[in-house]
Length: 117
Length: 111
Image (cartoon, rainbow over all chains, first blue to last red; front, side, top):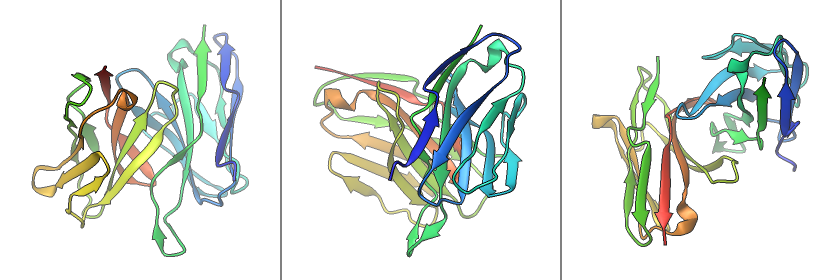
């Protein structure tokens, strides 16, 4: 299993540009989430999905869109990049229970470091 | 709303010292889970432990131990005989599938 994969690893955008951060998981997890990490603030939830076709907002959703057409993929779209979106972005997946084992912990991808100038 | 507070932003110790990282949380849920993650300098997030709100037994895994006290809403993490490889940022988190994270504690272990 590759686990959770994210592309790209690094990205530099100019203010106003748009882009999509890709995230995929091959563990058949029902839950997927996007977090951003800023210095001193830990990780904050942007958007999450509880299954294909179902998404919802987290703590800091403004400026981001998501969709989940398959169980495996959960892309994050920046509509019009702003310097305040300079951050490290982590995608994660999780499950509630499987084969008698309780889950809930997040399986994280390696992260995407985004700089907006 | 849920909240996780890690009051110690940075801790510096000398190798072989014991160190405790504090975590205090707030939630109105009766069933919840608490987590610790490690983020080494390479940047990935490594899962360390999950604890549910009904299980207040302390847990030990090698040099790591966790003390969960529901009465004080705390879930503290102790590293015994710290090593340089323990240098990292440690995050405490709360929730189920979608987590609320504390701000993290940067631990520096000097040789």
